[in-house]
Length: 256
Ligand code: NDP
Image (cartoon, rainbow, N blue to C red; front, side):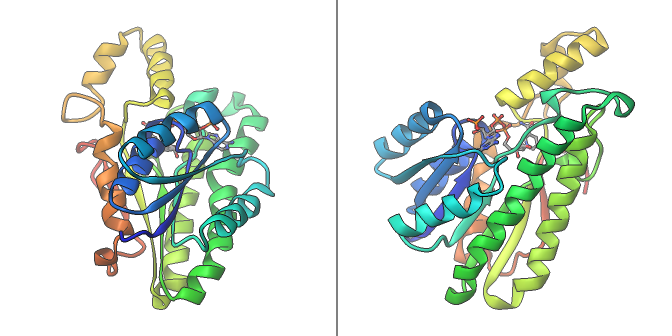
């Protein structure tokens, strides 16, 4: 990764944190963003303790002006972003409901953070990537880009849309030294999924522990640090021919 300038959104906890730590360990400079500055500080401590270089930017990606603000801050501090990892997301666990009862404000918020923010960030970084004739964009989608999440219409639609953004980006700029791919995690042990398992355990009248064993053919949930190695690979020069792909890391939960 040399010292590639990388932005990882939603890096305060969960999958984004694991990716930021792994990317920094590979030698890249990593800008990390989320709303909670205390969680960002915790991620930054881990990166710095391992000798990595990190920049913290606290912002809210539901704000349409945030992507431009964030990209500009990284540009001023280090220079143009070379690797963008769109990880921040709102899960179906925020307020799961069947479609007829779905809350329209949750629909708007989910699409703003999960789709519009990655789209705007992609546009912002592409200006510099096109100038450099090199770039890597990695979108953290979900197996719900392929199969629906029950009582999670906004989440399912957002992850299908992120798959479309991935393929569109790959097609539009693939001949310019820039690749765009999506990692599609399955059921992964994070705060987001903890809340979803609590909802499902109540709905199905079973225990969270029981649901965990059914989370994949592995008999368990995926761990965030089992997703980050693929992000490091996709961000590397060696991955130059991998473009426009949705790659599942789900322990065999779905077959795409
Ligand atoms: P977490 O809820 O644990 O972490 C989400 C991260 O995104 C946090 O750092 C959070 O920080 C940030 N974030 C959320 N909303 C905003 C916002 N409005 N502005 C800026 N940052 C925001 O989730 P996971 O680690 O589980 O999920 C990471 C990605 O992986 C998501 O895109 C998710 O959809 C995807 N995924 C997760 C799966 C799972 O089972 N866990 C399965 C498939 C996909 P803060 O709240 O401080 O802003």
